[in-house]
Every structure is written in structure tokens, then in C-alpha cells.
Image 1: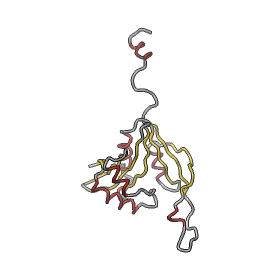
Image 2: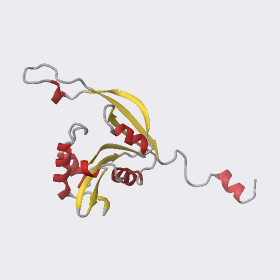
Image 3: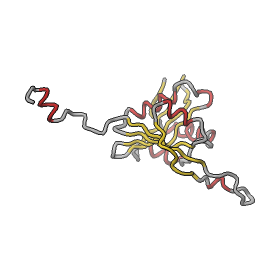
Image 4: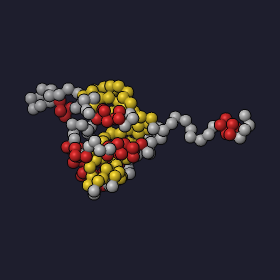
Length: 175
């Protein structure tokens, strides 16, 4: 089938896939998914469906300034490297006026994916502390924070799409 908008009955699938991929995805509470799907906030959750089964999702938010931020994208392991994630990104980009941005942990293979679909690395933006993983029962640190990279892609333009006054004058032969 391909890409479709998520429905409320997809939340259990999204949460389940999120749990399986928890090391690669940032934390998003289930209520955020429900609010986005219910239209309470200005975001998008899309599902990639194949043969009646969901195989991945993307979660992005949009602001009034024409920018979109991709918060999460996840594909089931058996559905990776088959253009599906790229299709999800393209579907989000169709609704973007100007810029798409995201953050990705530097230690993930996904950094190569983002560059392959046209995003530029803007460099390191800091270290994300994973407080829920920082301490064992003994209170000793178990893992340091991850280096986070920022990526962005200009999808639209910075200028008006309608012709300027000078372009109109040239077209009419008045200049």
C-alpha cells in the first residue's frame, strides 16, 4: 500500500516499535502520538504499510514559520534498506514550506541514511543525557551521554513563488 496517515488504532503498533528500537529513538510519550493523530497539535505521523501490515512510521512537527522537525522515524528490521524510510521522509517533505531539521545520535548508522536522502550535517549540537540509563542500582554511571548531530534540508525556498514586479515588467516588454 505505501504511506498513509496514522490512525488512533495505530498507536499500539507505534509504541511497540518504539519499544523495540528504544536505543535508536528518543523518548516520546504515548500521549504525544495520540494528540498528533487526533489533530490536537500541528504534527504528522505517517505509517508505511505493506500487504496490510504496518512496517514503520515517521513522526514530525510543523511550526508557523515553514519549518518541520522530524522527531522519530523507525522501520522494522525486516523492512529496512528497501526505500520505505525514504518514502516516509518524502511524504513529510511534501507538506514543508521551507526547512526540515532533525537530530540524530552520532553513533547510529542512521547518520548515513540522512545524508543519502539529501540532508546536510550541521555538526554536533551537544550531548543528550539519558538520565534513565545513567545509573544502575548501585548509583554508578553506566553510560555517558550520546553525541547528537543536527541535520537539515532546505525543501522550499526563501523567496516568494509569485513573480516580482520587475519580472512582470520584463514579461510585458516594458523594461
